[in-house]
Each structure stands twice: as structure tokens, then as C-alpha cells.
Length: 455
Ligand code: PFF
Image (cartoon, rainbow, N blue to C red; front, side, top):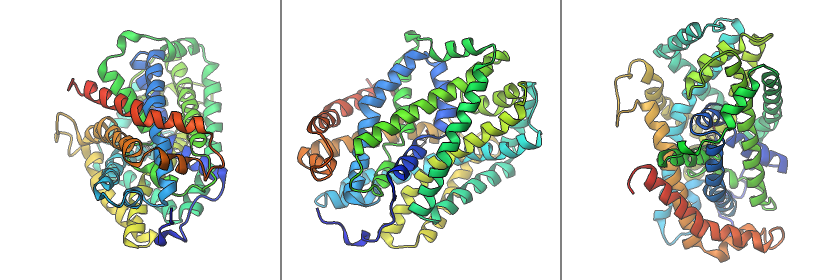
């Protein structure tokens, strides 16, 4: 296949390690710390992990391989990829367009949570949010989120921070940053995990996280698990297409995807191991969502020796994790504007950042000025989260499977995955093609329809 002209001098990832760091940086994020442990604990422990793993293997991972492969083949952004690979039918690029929309909706709430995390590094360092009394930490958090000025301010700080790295480029910005940050993230996580496991409530915490309870696994829980699988692996919205377009041609795509998925799972489990033993040791309730991070963690950790150091470390961990993820989401619209309209990276990032700050403020203000403004019974913050994880990403993934399995076809997949006949073994390609053609679309379709109570 001919390389499109406009992309000859395209910036891309330079080393194999850089590819892994950036891709893993995208997968690892607030999802590991804020969603995975709490959703697991509340929805049946090991039973939920089994459903999550099955969704990952049958849907998330195949979509990830498909996306990376498409991007690497087209060397284009999420929208242009479909135009380049299937010029006869423009409508396929709607998948990319939906991806750009998802990118804004995810970032709208994600930058807000990241804003709280960034704010908490400073607040924890100054000691202002530390107290063993959850009433105090709860009041401190309520004060932050109910303050429209602070909420919007920290969100804008995060957008500017991520934007500044994006402007530096793919290799000098994204790759360099994630290569430095990912080892630090692992180190901090292991430190906190070990500390937590030494506490007396460790067994109870692990029991909460892992004890299987299949009676909790309903249709809605399965949809949550699949949504989490998509959200965790950053798939179904063109992020991995965009990153795949920066992969070198000799990169083994299925192997990279598998490694990233396993490393991401390890981080999720480590996060659960770091959090729940501490929660149970000090007699707290394991709750889902922001309250776990911003109310329970400061209260729990400040009771341990050197607890304030651990609270700061915990939020540094969150900041690092969220940065890698936000870089990849923001890169979706930036790459599109840059490639499609030839605008500079700076202008593309500035335009994205401004639009994002506008949309994001509706999430940032959903605990204050816009608290009463609800659609489908949800605040804007919750609506963006629900819409993207439980609808847009799985639907995006479904169409990507249909495109690869039924429109593009096995011959193209074989060529795209085999690195011109060098790396890929035939069985891997056949298994992948079978999954992407039959297993993944059926799985996603059924879970979506059941989860949304349509069947
Ligand atoms: N995978 C990230 C997390 O678990 O926090 C979130 C995410 C990143 C979602 C990139 C979507 C995306 F495109």
C-alpha cells in the first residue's frame, strides 16, 4: 500500500520501549485507581474480575489490536484512517468522528477528576486535607468541588499542563514524558502496596477485593465490566488508531497489545491491593467513585506512620497515571486537526484546549452551579462518564470489528499484521481474525443490548 503523501515526515515513536511506555501510559490512568478496585469490590470481587477478563479477551484486546493495526497501516489520525484504508466509502470515517466526540466527552470529566488529584498533591503537602476523621476529609472535598472557581481553575491547570506536553510533539513530548513517568508510577505503587499489606486489615481488604460472588453479576454489571474493559484499554474511540499510526512498521502489534493489557491489569490489581487493606484496617467503608479517592484515602493514610508522605505519594501517582491517559485522549483531536487541516500542533492543541475547557466546565460545575441541571437523571459529569464507557466506546469498538472483520477482510489483516511476512505467525492471525469477525461483535452486541435492557 502506498504511504499517503502528507504524512512522509510524520513525527512518531522512536523506540520499542517508547511505544510500550506511551501505549501503557494511555491504558493506565484514573481507571486503575478510581474505577477498577471499587467496581470490583462492589460487584462480586473475583467474579467481576472474571467477567472483566473475559470482556477484555473477547472484546477489548481484539479491538485494541485492530485499532493499532489500522493506524499503523494508514499512518493517519482516527478519521483519515478510514478514508485512506477504504476510500470507496466515506461513511466509515464516522467511527473516527465519533471517536473525536468521545475524546472531548471523556476529557470533560477526566480533566476534572485529574484537577482534583493535582490540587490534592498541594493540599496534602500543606497538610490542609489530612485528618483521621472522614467527616473532616469529606468536608474538605465537598468544599473543593462545590467551589466553582477552584473547580474550573484546576481543570484549566490540567488542560494547560497536558497541552504543553502535546505541543512538544509525539516523540519529544508524549514518548519522552511517558518513558520517564511510567517507571516512577510502578515504583510508587509497589511502595504503597507493600506498606498497605503490612497493615492488620490486609486479609479483610484482599477478601473484599477477591472473594467471588457470582450472585452480584447481573446484565448491568456485565455491561459495566465491558465498559471498563474498553475504558481501561483506551479503545473504541480512535486513541489506539492514533497511537498505532506512530508505531514503527517492525513493531509486533498483537504482542504489544497483550503486554500492555497484562501490565495494565497488574497495575489495577496492585491499586486494589494498595487501597483496600488500608481502608479495612481503619474501619472505613469501601465506596465507589470520587469519595474513595478524595475522602477515604486521606483519612485512612493519615493514620499510618509517615501517612502524610504516603498521601502525597498517592496523589502524585494519580497525577502521573492520569497524565499519560489524558495525553493519548487529547492527541486524538489534535492529530486530526493537524493532519487534516494542516494547522500547526500548537494551534491544533490551543483550539482543542479551549473547546475542551468550555465543554469541561459543564462537568466541573456539576457539583455547584449546575448541580440541578440533569439529563436522563444524571449530572453532566455522570452523563459524560456513562455515555462514553457504556455506549460510545463499545459501539465504536463494534463498528471497528465490523470494519476489520467484514469490510477490510482477512487478506488485508494478514498483510497489516504480519509486518510484510516477517514477524507474525499464521495461527495468531487466524485466531485474531476469527475473534474480530465473530466473537467480539457478538459479545459486544449482546452485552450492550442486555445491559441497556433492550433484550
Ligand atoms: N485508560 C484510561 C484509564 O483507565 O484511566 C482512560 C482512557 C484513556 C480512556 C484514553 C480512553 C482513552 F482514549
